[in-house]
Amino acid sequence: MRVLQAADARSPVDAHTGVCDSHGADARSRRGLRVKALILGATGQVGRALYAAAPPGVVVVALDRASLDLADPAAIAAVVGRERPGVCLNAAAYTAVDRAESEPELASRINADGPRALAAACGACGARLVHVSTDFVFDGAAGRPWRETDEPHPLSVYGRTKLDGERAVLDRDRGSSAVVRTAWVHDASGRNFVRTMLGLMRSRPQVRVVADQVGSPTWAPSLAGALWGLAMRPDLHGLFHWTDAGVASWYDFAVAIAEEAFARGLLAAVPEVVPIATEDYPTPARRPAYSVLDVRRTAGRLGMQPHHWRANLRRSLGEMSVA
Image (cartoon, rainbow, N blue to C red; front, top):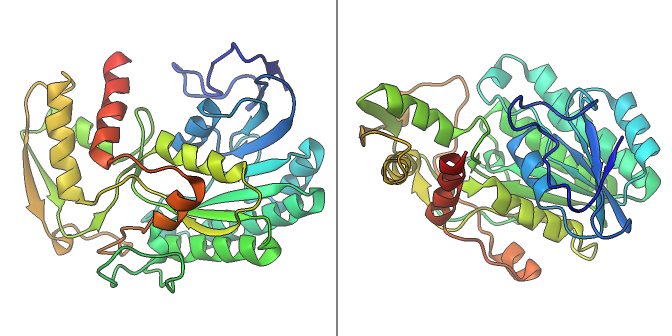
């Protein structure tokens, strides 16, 4: 494990190869060695954003799946025991929503058993755990933004296993752990809806997108800011919600992507975006029709307000333009 100085602003993921430096673990020091933070899921879009946004005075140990597999409880205990972090941010998960329907055991090992083992390991060394969860723990039937106090009712294997993971973390150490639900995460380089749409829009004059599922697109760096805010506030624990501001259907999101990408030269023309119903695009996993999360409590506790999703979409596309 190498300690990088504050002036070294490299990501743990090489910009050209998409793989972690060296053995998949990296450490960075910024203005002293006051706090060690362990980031799980370093090669994912949230993990990369967390690494890039590490606060001053934090040594970051960023681990990808090759360095620490959440399906291996013994490895979790060994790595956390060896590193003894002050805080652990878990951005690793099984996120293949549709494939989870045919791989429920694997999804459960990663999304439920892994966080349970991680919470136990963090508790053993006194580390604070900040765990990322999802809007898919809700069924979408409320018709209003979901609060932390609302009763979950997942519709899919993915949602159920993520809910099991939440409960495992909070049951193990409710007084020092934080679980943060988020939704529709995207960035400039990950596997996400924005990049999928751009690929389709470059190859087709028309795309068909579901218009009756509503949520809040969330830029990964926005989520990372909230996660670090909670990580550095041990007085805040329990359930939290964080997304970018505003709401959109997948259709609305796609229209915005087309317009903003064309304005930045990422598309040669604006394709036709056709709204369709969920029933016109059947998938193995059921999705919540309305999964907007109420972030007011989290924003108030942290003293920070999320930017509107379209403003952050412009920032994300701007990074693609520069790249």
